Length: 237
Image 1 (tube, helix red, strand yellow):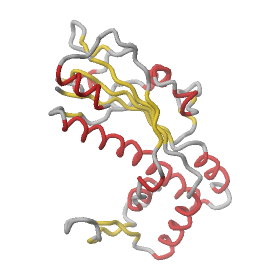
Image 2 (cartoon, rainbow, N blue to C red; image 1 turned 120 degrees about the vertical axis):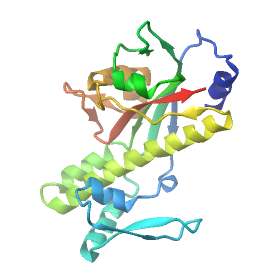
Image 3 (cartoon, rainbow, N blue to C red; image 1 turned 45 degrees about the vertical axis):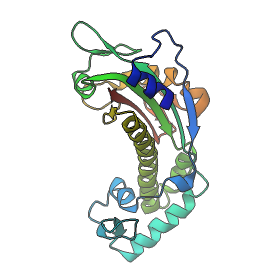
Image 4 (tube, helix red, strand yellow; image 1 turned 30 degrees about the horizontal axis):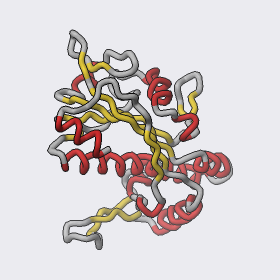
C-alpha cells in the first residue's frame, strides 16, 4: 500500500501496470467487539449506556447494556463467536481518470452521481472486499428459529464484526495516506445512493474474491457469506 501511495504522491504511477489484488487476514484480537454497535444492529438502539471508559486517554468511552439479562445473553453470543469467524480482506488500487462528463472511470461501467461526488478531487481509488466468513451464517441458522433473541444478537454481532473489520482497514488507509500528505475519502459501497448493487460482480471479480475470500453472489446480487462488504475508497492527492 505504501509503495502505491508514495508513487501517487510523486506522480510516478505506471498507468500500464498490471493490477494484482492483495489479500490480508487480521487476528480476532485486533478488532475488539463494540457491544453498543452489536445491540444497535440487533435492534436494541436504546439498550446501551454510554459511560466513561478505561481507555488510553481521559476522554475514552465505552457502551454497556442497561439490562443485566441482555448483557449476559450478549456475552454468551460473543463467546459463541470465539474462534468461529475469520477476518479477511482483498483490495487493489486504481489510478483514476474521468470521462467527458466528469464521472470517474473505473474498471466497470457506472454513472453514479453520488460516487462522483464522493470521489471529487481523487486521483486514485482502493477497491476492497471484506468478509468474516461462513461461520456466522452457520451460527445464525442454528439459533434463529429456536432461540430468537440469540439469533438477533448473532445477526447484530455479524454486522458489527464485518463493519469493524472494514473500519480497521479504512483506518490503515487513512494513516498511510496521511503519511504521504494524501487524504482518504469516506468509503462508499454498492447499494448506497445511486450506485447500483449490480456492480458487485465486477468488484468481486477484480478482487478474485470467490477464490480468495469465498464470496459468491446470488441472482439478486446478495453476497454469501452474508456478512461481507465491498467498498470504494478514494485517495485525494
